[in-house]
Every structure is written in C-alpha cells, then in structure tokens.
Image 1 (cartoon, helix red, strand yellow):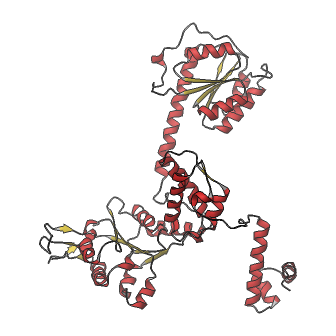
Image 2: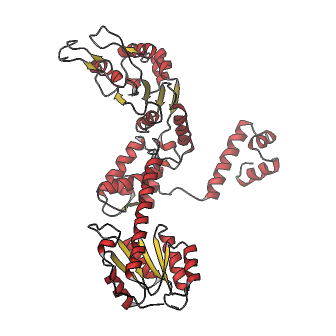
Image 3: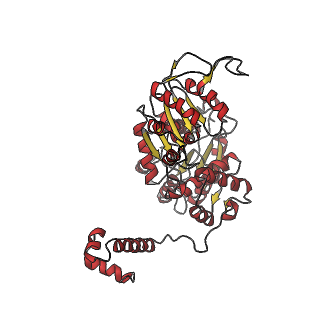
Length: 468
C-alpha cells in the first residue's frame, strides 16, 4: 500500500502546533517503503523520527524510544495488499502502550478498514497519497492531545492522593486500622497510638491531622524521649523572659504553638512523672501556664500520642499515672509489627527499591527470589524503618541491578517457603483438627460441630493426617 508522497509543499515549522523543545518529541513511522520513509523523514524533521517496517521492529522501536505518536501503514508485508498485518501491528502496539496515539494510513478506497482501525483503538486515520502539511497538523494535534491527557493523569493522581496514600499494605489488619483512622480523624478525641518502634506511628498521626478539620493549622511533633527532662517542660509549655538563666526572651512552647492544630506527643510513655501531672491538668482545663508566668493561656489543640511501651504495665509499676492514661486513651489504635503483616515486607521492599534506586541514580533495580525469601523469613525487629535501611544499604552497595540475599545481609533457610496451595491448605487443616480435638478431648461429634464439617469428613481428615 505504499503511495507517492505529495511533497510539493513542505510544512512550515512555525505552523507545527507543537512547541519546539530542546528534546524533539518522538514520532514512530511504521512504513515498509524505503523511498516513502526518506521523504517522511525530510517532511517531519521537527520530530525525532524512528522507523519500522514490520510488527516486530515496531514493537522494538516502541520499547526503545517510547514514542507518543505513531503513523501506521495498514498494508505491511508479507501481504501488503491486505490490512491483516496492519491490524495485527495496531493491536500489538496498543497492547504494549495503551496511551500511544496511532494514526492509521490507508488507501483512498479503504474507508471501511479505516473505520475498523478506529474501532480497534487508533487515534485517527488518513488516506494516501497525502499532503505532508495536512498530515503534519493531524500529528501535531495528536501530540497536543497526548500532552493534555498526561497532565490530566498527573493532576488526577495528585488529587487522588490521600493522607494514607503513603501507607502501603495488603494486610487486612492494617487496612482495618486505616479505616479506623479515617473514622476518628474528624472527631476531636485524643488518640493513643500503640506499636513497636518503626511501625509507622507518626505517619498515622499525620494522617489523623490531614483528615481532620484542623488540617489547615499546624501539626507539631515532639519526642518525649529525645529531650532531657530538664528541658522538656520548657519545650512543652514555654517560658517567660527571665524565668531562668538563659531565658532571654519569652518563648511559647510546643503546646501553644500547635494552637488550632494537632500536637503529636511521641513516646509519651517516657514522659517524666514530674510533667505527667502538668500535662493532665492541661488536658482537663485546656489551659497552660508558661514557666515563670502567672497568666493562664487557653489553647485549642487536638492531642495525639504514641508509645512503644505497655502503659498498663507502667501503671502497675508506678511509672505512669492511671488518670493520665485514661485522658490520653479516648481512642486507642494498636499497630501490629511488620512480622505480623502478611505480605507487607515484600510489598514495601519492592516500593523501597524503586524509590531508593531512583534517588541514588540506579535505575531498574530488582529483588531476586532469594532476597524475597530472606525478606519474608526475617523477623524485622526494627519494623519498616529497619527494612528501609536494609534496602537502602543494598541499593548502594549492590554490584549489579539484581539485589540478592547477601546484598541485604540476610540469610535464608535451607528449605525456602512453600507456596504450594495444597500443602498450605493441608497443613492448616491438620493444625485446626489437632487444636479442636484437644479442646473437646477427642469428642468426634463436638469436634465436627466446631469445625463445621460432618463426622465422616472428620474421620477422613483424621485418617489422612494419621491422627486416629
């Protein structure tokens, strides 16, 4: 279906409609006629033009150059008199790059094939022979439409992001916690976040703030374990000028600074007992008094606390006030450690590899199967923070693009985890039968009732697992 190109008029650059940039936009031309290729390169030199003469070479050029727009001659070898190969190429291109704008080039009498190409997903069609200036306008419009669609997708992604978007999880328990955060955020209740170090307590605290009516005000965080006891009171409540040596000017504390917003007290379990009574009074009266001051200052602030400690044990030990605990725990959210979140370690590891590789100028890094096995088997006592540090070190130190278990500094068991569903199901059934039979002291009728199966089925399971 090669046709003679009418190049009596060459398209003027100023009328191209596509802004000239330092890097030309890439145009893929799928055409098997070498003479026509040469003329099209000359006519569309305002683009970075790449050519292909078959479906296979078109896909290769697509992967290599990632063009935004393509022209496709529907008459390609081995049978250029029919559109069969052209339609196959169109299907393959759109499957590989759904956003690619494909302009199908057909003969003057091929209107039905042109309409079929549109129905298959082509952006537009154009009949041969053609004037390059007119075809150039169609190509320019395709580039503009592609640019607008890309900007819309980026805007949609920005608008679609939520304060919880940064929390990656597939674990049902963590997903339930996310729903809890969304429900409690609009309320003004004090929230206590419980969880091991590195589980994401501050991330959830910030999400509480961003999802609340206070999101336009300040989020103020302070780590109660990171500041010496002698300075912590001044940090929290502020001080008047001359209140102590070095107090050269009146300085508001963190509580006062957070007025109208959210105060996040991290590691509240390490708060000195001398300050617990003063914090309790603030929570009851919603007023503070600076060190060295005599004036009570009203403060409207939402308090969110977090700790890795067991506060009930601290109450028994006498290191934490029980009345303060009840003031802080109007809503309690317990965050599970990473080792108890099914599948999250691998999910987070993949995300960390992509982000950290980009930050360190190392593109397309992957995790090998032995690395994933090691990640899934490791206990991660430091939780998400430990995992992120481990991945960061591996990204920097790895020799190749594939991260191994040795790059992570982790060991794997001799027998890797089994993913055979039958084996997993059999083991789960065996454990369930063992537990129930022990609970009912061998009573078959009661065991079958608890397991929700018939007695013959239970007998079959006992025989299969050798438990009779």
